[in-house]
Length: 436
Ligand code: UDX
Image 1 (cartoon, rainbow, N blue to C red):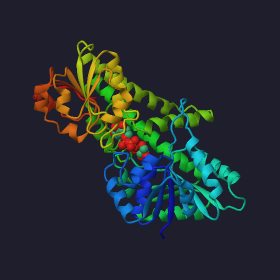
Image 2: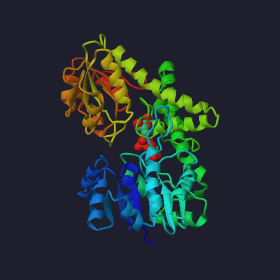
Image 3: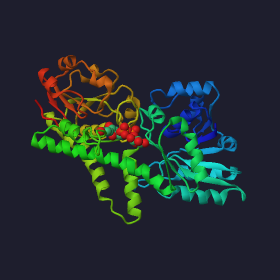
Image 4: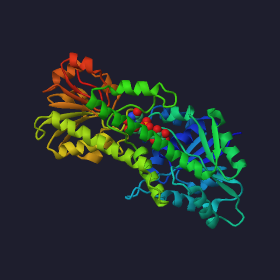
């Protein structure tokens, strides 16, 4: 059965899931309050860098299954399923700003007639579905019948389209089986296992998954720090651990820690959720602390490698929080650059796609931006890898060596082999692996 959907919010989650629901045959209208963004999307101009998305948007626009509009009322009136995928940014205290979710709900409420399903895709604190149901009830016409369902999203930036078509699971939190079955049916083309549960558990599954993955990363980063001290190799340790099926090989890549729009925000939010019910979530507190320290530790190592940091030139290779995205939100590179600039280091920054968003956050004081990695390293006293882009992994290292003032490479993402780097004559410092 094909459904008519309104998707409120065209951020990562709304835009990708709306487009993918259209691709499998549903009629989808994506809504945003940002007129400029909607105008661009109507021309299939994608505001984010996301491999494969533009092609999908173009095709579904062309075939009439996908529309973009600022007319929320029109879209909701026509839709049977209304997805809320607006932003839930952090508040200064680490809590979740629910302003956009509530504003969307207040506009949807008067339009509720018969049997609409409101589906919450935004990452929201436990109890939101229940709270929204009573908010909608207060503002909806008296005889309106509707259900509020939780359906968290697990896609990753940079592989969002692929993740949607190869999702590990569909989580549906609902108070009524019929509503859950309808959302399960909508996901049938993605052929993923479906978990139907209560709404509170569904809301918590999203936070628990992100917190657990963040914990794996902080754990392996602490192991890397230990490896440095005892002369072991964290890659071998991770490989050996990952061979145990109960542990698994994923998210054991040591480096300078996690960033992005989800892990930092969601771990903080989960800590707040626990605090609000007087529970001290000790592991999560440490996960966050270790992630912060890992950035500082790398900055310290760079400063040590530059004999006299003040006035030195350092090339930074990679700015985005991970490869295949131009997202620099909470990217480790940005924090590390700030520390270095404060020490008087002059930074030459290179990234294949994230220069503009990075420059708008970091400014130009003490930082020059380069679209060519070789120009960035020319004359540098050291270079530091922050993101494992293919463009960086495939650099001509001999050329790099020739261009640098001093051939010192600090690798925050373990992109290169210590033996090969030693052979090329680099002083090579990586994470949790003995230098050769
Ligand atoms: C994450 C979750 O994976 C996704 O399910 C959720 O919906 C949103 O948050 P995303 O933020 O796009 O997705 O990135 P992800 O690929 O998970 O990486 C997050 C961060 O962890 C990156 O900074 C990455 O560099 C870092 N990371 C990841 C490591 O440092 N080591 C690893 O082994 C894996």
